[in-house]
Length: 145
Image 1 (tube, helix red, strand yellow):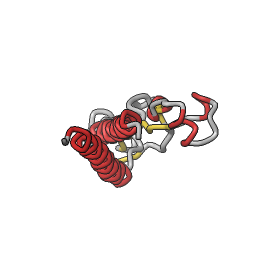
Image 2 (cartoon, rainbow, N blue to C red; image 1 turned 30 degrees about the vertical axis):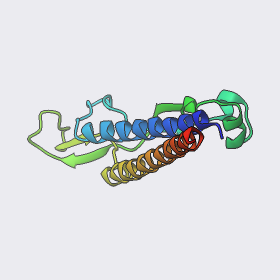
Image 3 (cartoon, rainbow, N blue to C red; image 1 turned 30 degrees about the horizontal axis):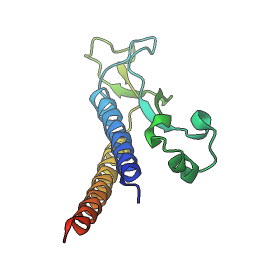
């Protein structure tokens, strides 16, 4: 068994899940940043994955066989979500009706993304540790006389 590939796959998974957590945290941090009256301001982000467009491979197995890192096909892109309007007549950026527009960040979705990504990260760590344990046991077997 090639342990370096197992380590690389686990490391790529950990990196991808860290990116998902970072993007969700950024969205949550900017959820209450008011938009300008013209609608300019923070745009929520999403992590997009695309292995076909990057490598031209047909399956995950082809990607692993070529020894490429899985997360090289990840990108962060803004997505259009309708602005959230909140009635705050005393706010300096309120419109004439007393509403302030905020980015269309869905707090529940972002929290779920963070939970799922952290669980997937834990699974990648467990896979990495299992591969490391197998490699160490293989070295122990070969070292005994």
